[in-house]
Amino acid sequence: MRRPTVLRITLNILLLALLAVVLGVSWNVTEIDFPGLISNLPNGEKIIKEVLSPDLFTRDFETATIEIPFAIPCGSAPDPIPPSSGPRLIATPACADEKTSFTLEGFDLSPNAEIVIRWQFPDGRILTATRTTTDADGHFSTSVDAKPIASAVDGVPSQLQVDTNVSVGNLKTSQALQDVTREMFVTIFMALLSTTIATIIAAPLSFLAASNIMRRGVVGTTIYYIFRSFFNLMRSYDPLVMATVFAFWLGYGPFAGMLALTVVTIASLGKLFSEAIESIDAGSIEAVTATGAPRLHTVVYSVIPQIVPDFISFIIYHWDINVRISTIIGYVGGGGIGYYLSQRINTFAYHQAGTAILAIVIVVWAMDFLSAEIRKRLT
Amino acid sequence: MLRIQNLSKTYPSGTQALKNVSFDVQDGEFMVVIGLSGSGKSTLLRCINRLIDPTEGKILWDDVDITAAPPAELRQIRRKIGMVFQQFNLVKRSSVMTNVLSGRLGYANPWMSLIGLWSADEKKRAIDALDRVGIADKAGERADALSGGQQQRVGVARALMQEPKLILADEPVASLDPVLSHSILQYLEQLNKEGITVICSLHFLDLVHRYATRVVALKDGVIVFEGSAQEIDRAKFKEIYGEEAQEVRAASL
Image 1 (spheres, each protein chain N blue to C red):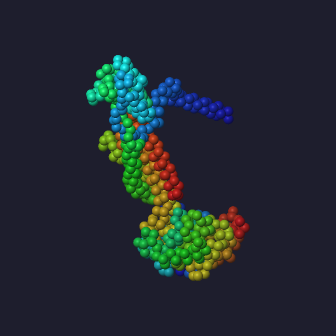
Image 2 (image 1 turned 135 degrees about the horizontal axis):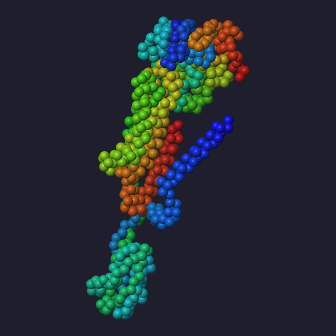
């Protein structure tokens, strides 16, 4: 009895050693870099920040000219009363003598914009005074020379002018949000259409892959194995692979994505349907047959009530799954929201990518919730 | 009169469920079939309405050969033979009403019943059938919402819808407790007294004594006893159920 025990312990140690080696290799090929998680934090922070502030709303803008009168020399014209809100210019001091300079500040102008500061003389002629740039809050502060040419004439002062964008009207949805909404609908409908087509094809085929229906005689058994293998084989092709093939074949777009989804869904639904058919209670079929009911009526009164709730449940579940998958399928050229997302990420437009990601999260969550609720009610 | 002549059934797996079985059932009898599990009782009952096709032999019902009937004629025959099952065999997700109405599929207009339309007459018949078994108030419920005893009553009501001349009951009370067993068998007894022939397989010998007008015992697909319940003495019992067997009374459970 001793020897087998020793042998077993040795075997176990060998197995553990093998497991350790395999895990070590896995660690190596994965190029583990935990310090990188910390050292590259700024990169991650930037993209996460931008993605988390999705581009949702915008306002309409139009270009407006902001101006204040500026008396040169002091006393040649009344000093302006500076406004306290809105896009505005404020000069300090409020007037100046010739050949001195003063500070001009602008508030609530377009952020991060090039600003041209102009004189408009009393006779209407225009002269560029200086150029500057606003900061992120739309503020600038710059020094301006009080040139003699800008002197007031007959009590009428020259005007200091800047052009800026001012928002008009209310908040409205941004271009990104509109695009994302449209692409999201494309994705949802793409998933709906592929699920529908797949159902139409899979529902009849699933009967051919149901053992309780088909495994009678050589012909039936052969057909059963052919369809069962067909479904299993098709299921093992990832939707991404399918989408790549169809995108190459038909060009990028929702049609390629829809076809890829359809093929995968046929296989998956076919298998699920056939299993639902296999699990039906033969007893009730027997009972309805025994009443003298015609064959079709036996199916309608016994088989259909047993499989339809399962079928509908699987179909809704797959629509849900297909919406989720089609967001990824778009990435390899399948159209819809995934394609939009991939393009935004490739052009570093992370705010817009954030909009797409937000939409995907909301829609996937909603579909998941809805499909679970509906399926709960079906059983 | 139902005549079973030299009936044999061999399944594709090679199992011989019935071997040269012959007996007659007179109209109005309450014939009970006994025997161990696997002795061929279910196969025998299912051969009578051809849920299972026998391999050899004939079944004559009022001189009509059931075993040779073509599909259309077979359906005509089946609708006169009600059947009650051990597992009730209701369509669980359908309503009690739909289950009972399905017993009428052999009679109703096939186009109407195909899309679930039933005449007021048929619906009244279904309610009456449910009323007979005391559960008319359950008509709207889903079949699987009912208890076992109630489900079997639905099974009886479904058989009643066929206006049967013969009822086949395949261990109708094997899934029920003793009290419910009696209530179901009393419905069958009542129907039997109204002139419907009953062929019923049973497990418990006290139930056999109580309800059977005649008994057929099967062992390994062969008839080993035919006669009245009173004739089954200790020796016969051992012969039917084997040396190890002890009699279990339903009432003592």
